Image 1 (spheres, helix red, strand yellow):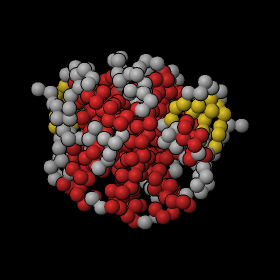
Image 2 (cartoon, one colour; image 1 turned 60 degrees about the vertical axis):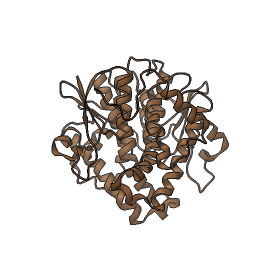
Image 3 (cartoon, rainbow over the protein chains, first blue to last red; image 1 turned 90 degrees about the horizontal axis):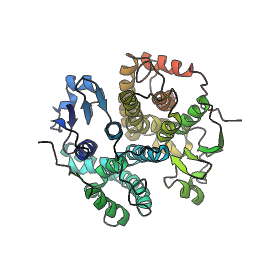
Length: 206
Length: 206
C-alpha cells in the first residue's frame, strides 16, 4: 500500500486525498500539520525524502517517492475516466493544472493562509493582501468565463483538472474572495461536490 | 501549420520555441513584447483567444487553442524521446514541471523581470527583492541537490523537464542568483546547451 504524507488543512494535500478516495485507492495516511516550528516536513528524515520540505508526498511500497500535488493526480488518474485519452483534451487538463499552480494557488491559497494560520498573521497588511486579492480575482474571472460556457473546466467531463482547482476554490471565501457572486463557479462547486465518492477536506482514511 | 504567439525575451515563451526547434516542428511565429501598455496580449482579439492575456499561446490550423508553456511542452513532446513512456519516469517529469511553475518561476523569473523590464523598475526594493532571492535560492538548491546526483533532472535522460527548468535558470544571474557557485546546475546548463538542435533565447524561425 502507498503512504501519503499530507497536511489535513492544506488544499494541495486535499486534492490527493479526494482523488484517492474517488478512485477507491487505499493508502496509509501520515499527517503533518504546522505546529510552530517542529513540523514533520522540517525534519532531516523528511527532507531526505523531499528536499523541498513540502507535502503532499507519496511513498510507494518499494520506497520510490513522488511529490507535487498535480503530478500525483496525473499519475493516479491515468487510465481512469478522470483523465481523458484524447491528446487535445488531455492537453487542456494539463493547461488548467499548470494555470492552477502558476496563476491561482499562489494568490488564492496564500491569501487564505494569511488569515487561517497564526504564524502567518503578520501577512495581514494591505501591501501583501491587496496584490493577492487582485491576482486572485483575475484567476477566478478566468475560471468564471470558462464555467459560464461549460459545466466542467475542459467541457462536459469531470476530470482531475476540476479536482486540482476545486481544492483552493471551494474555500476561497476564507481568503476574502467573492464566490457567491460568481454564478458559474458557484454552480461548478456544487457539481463537483455531487460527483460519486466525493469527500470533504476533513476526510481521512479509517 | 501551427501559430505560436510568443514573447521574444520571455523564458516561458522560449521553452516552447526551443522544443519546437529541437523536434523540427515548423511554426509561424507572432511576436508580442511589452511596449508600455499597447501590447498585443491586452487587445480584445487576444483576450478572446486567451482570457489570461498571456503568452505563449498555440493556435492550431483548425483554430483550437492551447496555453500554459508546460502544457504545450507536454503536448508536442508526446511520442518523442523527450517524454518518457514509463509511468513513474513520466510522473517525475510532471513533478519537476509543476515545481518549475510553483516554486521556481514565481521567484526566479519575477526577480529577473524586476531588473530587466523598465516598467517593473519600481519593484527594485528590498521588500520585494529579498523574499524573491530567498525563495529562488531555495528552488535552485533543490535543483542543485538533484543535479549533483544525476546528469539530468529525472536521471540519465534529457526530457521536457530539463527544457522547462532551463528557460529561466540559464538567465538566473540576471536576477542576481549565483549560478557559477552551483557546480551541479552549471554543468547541467552546459549539457542542455550541447543537446542536438539546441537554440538560444533569441532564435526565431526564418
